[in-house]
Image 1: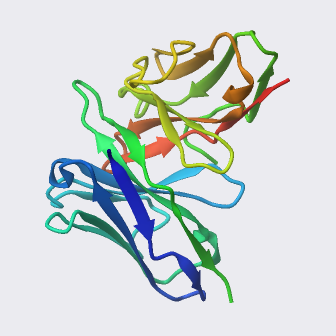
Image 2: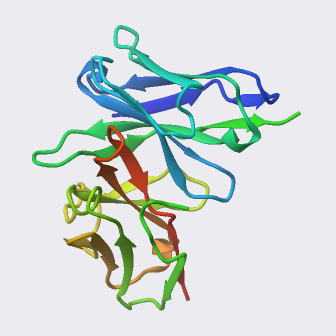
Length: 122
Length: 111
C-alpha cells in the first residue's frame, strides 16, 4: 500500500525556518517524481515545488523561489522541504504528492499524504 | 488569482448530472493534459480524473472528463450526497520553465 506521511509542521515566527519531511513507503520511491502542494486555510490548492526522481531537476512556484528548497534522499525514501524566511502567507497545510508517469501526458498526483500544518505567526 | 478558472460553486439534486468547467490557456490546458482532484471535507485531495478523461481504479464511472482546446470539463452523473466536495482541475504549464497550475476549486453542493 502506498503511503506518504508528512511531518515537521508547527508554529514558527515570521522570518523563521522549518523543515518538512515526507516519508514514503509501499512503492519504489527512487522511481517517482515528487511534489509539494499547499493549501492555505479555507483556500484552494497551490503547487509549491517539484523534484525529479534523481533530484537533478527542480522547479519552484514564484511565490517560494529563493526561500524554499526541495530535496530528497532516495536511500531513506524521504522527501524534504526546507522553508526559510517564512511569511504569514506561507501558513497552510503542506501535502507531499507522488507524480504518476503517464504515456503522452505530463503526469498527475496519484497519491497524497495527509498533510502537515505550518502556521507562521508572531 | 488562479491560472485555471473554475466556477466557485455548483449544485444539483440527487440523481442529476452536473458539470464543472475549467478554463486555461495555450501554455497549460491547450498543450497538456488535464487532471481533476476531489477533496472531501477535512481530507487530502484525491485523484479523480487524469489525462483528460481517464479514471483511476476505484473511481466510479459516474465521473467523466473531457477537454477541448483550452478548456476542460468534469461531469458527474447520477449525483449522490457523498459527491459533495471541492473539485480542482490542474495541468502542467509550459511557461516560466514549467510548473503545475491549479484551478481555484469548485464547491459542489448536493441539495
